[in-house]
Structures are given as C-alpha cells and as structure tokens.
Image (cartoon, rainbow, N blue to C red):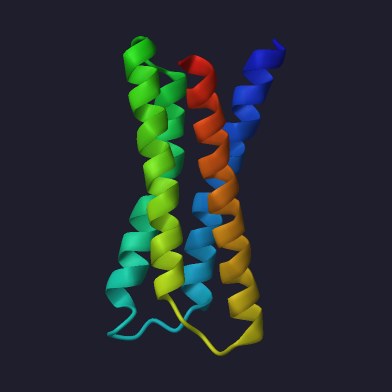
Length: 118
C-alpha cells in the first residue's frame, strides 16, 4: 500500500509540474519570438507527466526503464526551454526559476529510481 501511495505522490507532482507550466505560459508575454519556446516547453512538461504515468503501467522491466528515461529526458528538455525564456518581470522570473528547480528535482528523482533498477 505504501508503494502505491509513493507512486501516486510522484504522479501528482509530475501533473502539478505540467499544470504549473501551463499557468506560467498564461502569465508570460506570448510574442512571436517566444512562441516556439513556449510550445516546446508545454510539450516537454506534459511529456514528463505522461511518461511517468506510463512507467507506472509498464509492460515489463525494460518498458519501465525506457519510460523513466524518457521522463527524465523531458524534464531536462523542459529546463532548456525555460532557460530560453527571458523576462524582466521579477514575479515571472521567480516562477520560471521555481519551475527550473522542480524540473531538476524530478530529473534527479527519475535518475535515482533508474539507478535502483539497474
């Protein structure tokens, strides 16, 4: 039971990251230059959550590892897109930095899980 709860907590955290990126997008100035970075960011953040969810419904050990690796890769990619977005508004910058921190933490969690599986 505790293991199931642990997975659910991380699923919720991944979902929250994805939804927070979506909310961030609504606050960020959406101009021509930033448009593609924001689109890529939304895709990669959503993919973190989707791949971790799929990892929990894995077809076997190799599928589990592959989904976790993809989730980790997508978290890393989210960091890249977040760093591409620039703003001079303090509150938006703080939110961006918090999202980067969360993506790094998720990446580290997926890496630790993968290390335990090997």
